[in-house]
Length: 452
Ligand code: PEP
Ligand code: CO
Image (cartoon, rainbow, N blue to C red):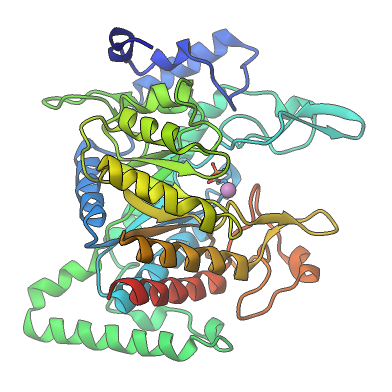
């Protein structure tokens, strides 16, 4: 590609490039109509919030803070309910409090939420009762029910996705602003659930110590303690359905560049990061911080070109590298990548996604992950970054605040036979409430070995 062609970017210039993972909508007229409607709707987030988040990420790239990115593998429209949203915010806040308390640095909370509705799939079709039908690609594209009508890509879902994201975000903002996030009431945290966990004592101690700290601040500076009621929370999703994301990609007054105003941060999936493909073309025009999933198969040189293309000015806080090698491949693949990034001088934020390289199916065909495999990749990631002298600044987890049975292992020792008790995910298996809290303690322990 020549320089001139590289420069002519627009929110829709991706349409001239080869695209993966986005099926053709059969009704193009309906698609255009929905796209136009979506373009006219107000933004979900603001450019100011995006810029603040980028500054926070820049701090992480300098080793001064930590990022917790987590949520469902796939959100579903049907789960836009009060308990689901409350539980998700609760588990993300509580895991972040564990990290802050144990590590003593600020934690940037980023949900895979309010837009995580589109999924890449390893095959386009599946066979159900002898009939070949489109695979489910997330509620933003088609329906989960396994019959061909519901699996046809439907552009009305772009609008429904926007509304569901807006409702989710509205409730999240209200909860995070007042009351719910109130650090003055750690007694509302459900500790009973942790009773038979080896970290119960640590957790209890942490709650006590937060309570004391809050009382202390209350006593010496009552005006400051009001601020403890508010917590920062950011949204993110994989920008896979580029119709959805590009319709919400806009310019704002008195600022240069284009912002994807459907989320604070978006990421490129492991299967859609071809340097000459449509997704990278779309991403290169954004002002938002962007994540790049990096896992097998990948080439170091191509990854360097990709980072350069998305961040030619080497702006700190712009690129988050989310590595997801799998526990058996990380030792071989991460060190070279760290060395290459250092050689190029890229100011990236490094995070570890210990979930996506560690998925397997049980003998009876249930997709799951083993808690110990996830921990093993986290540990290796910290060990490798430590020995390379680089800063691992975050984790990327698929988790839920609900008591699901999707991943085996953890202190409660869920086994494969127990998986069907409460297996709810629409896509990949998530850590449940207790496994998530336990993971937070383990992450903090590893971080402390490396950086405190
Ligand atoms: C995901 O994050 O749900 C996902 C599909 O990840 P990856 O692109 O790393 O496979
Ligand atoms: Co997933």
